[in-house]
Image (cartoon, rainbow, N blue to C red; front, side):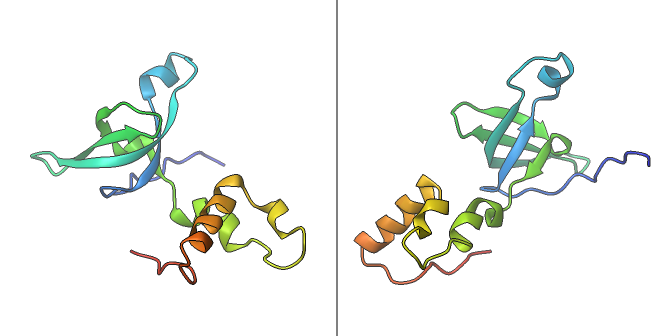
Length: 119
């Protein structure tokens, strides 16, 4: 089965993406893949898009091609909270520390229910 390259997606400001630095990757260097937040969408004269990215570890990547980015959907980041068993004495064992911290914070501030998802 031949390999096909997926079409580049259009990303928006504040999207979380996985970015692979192509120069580091093709040179065989370690540390070539980063989780980033899109900070700016730059449109060229011919309609092409480039992106400025803020790695979650700090720094900035300027004018990145979308071909080297993949969207990190919110549903994937929140899956452990969305699917956590909330009954039984061992319910918290299957949750990450981040999920437990978020639920504890919501309980401490007396905020009922889960927030309404945004588009």
